[in-house]
Length: 419
Ligand code: UD1
Image: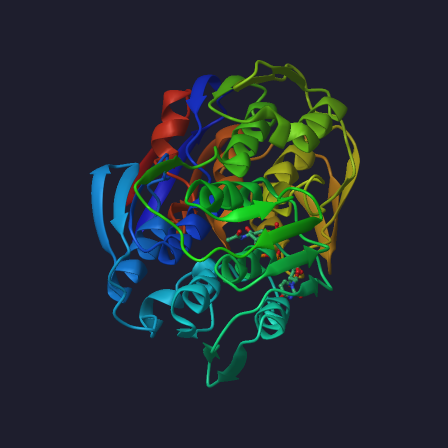
């Protein structure tokens, strides 16, 4: 078992380089199944979700060469099976993208129900509704989803819920469908735009990604022979922005798209932090105890649920009382019990949590309950007085490349220890 041992408090200072976006990468990789050719993808984050995605593709017949730790060349000309490996697809949520891509490529796929962070109920009814409207038959039996279509035909699909996964999955299934598909009430997250840009680079005809109406004109074939660079990770950048505030530090966050960070910038300024937009970098610093603030998580461009735990660390140290309303997931406050072990005063009930700000946090042994909760605990450990031990690192390694190395470079006293 591994743990991170952090000795604090340390104001984080210096430069951090942001990797490619996890949530874009785990959709772009299965999207390569729609290509009958070879393509190169760079700026891939070197994280376990990406490695498992690559393994799934290899088990389906793709050939993958790692050119560097962040770049692969992938040959998807020879796809040999329509059964996705259950042992791997159950390990993370985004394995559901195999459904849309393989329906498009082969007209059939069998895949296990996706795994991933336990954030409450995570239904996929909107994905299935979209596939069925395109002409597929979908059945779910004993934890396995089977989707089959003689032919996919474009149509209008209204999403009952704004869903990142369903928007991307239906987009994947419609790229090679006959005619035009319209996705209405689509999600607008930066990674949706990135997946559409990737597919368009490979020959697809997708318009309107990033708005709530996406139009996909089906094409006969996607060509390979092209390279694509994954968009910088909005959530990793936001994690370090909030780490700068929580530790009263001063960070230059490099290689990010500042437009994607506007909701975070606004909240940081509200709590008294400073933010300077430098084009492809963002400079964040905070010299005093943060002010209280209320947060409601929302789909993009609202405040992202995936930064709610990191913001929770800032508010647990704020001058005054704050409320967070979580509008996306039912169980996203499990981390508050861990922060309370460190001296925070948080009362969570249902989808709301009340934060009575404290002056200091104190080191303690704590457990990552999910990916972003784990990142929040590292931030808390860096801000806290004394020694914090963070366990359950497998959650954190799913989504952050070299996290302890990055924190160490900006001053944190942090090491990974195997027990
Ligand atoms: C993606 C992100 C995840 C992030 C979330 C919200 C990936 C791999 N994961 O998850 O990190 O927290 O967006 O920004 O990109 N819903 C339904 N039916 C469906 C689909 C979703 O009811 O068919 C509900 C969910 O229960 C949830 C809400 O819609 O309440 C949003 O979920 P969705 O946007 O689909 O999240 P994911 O794509 O799973």
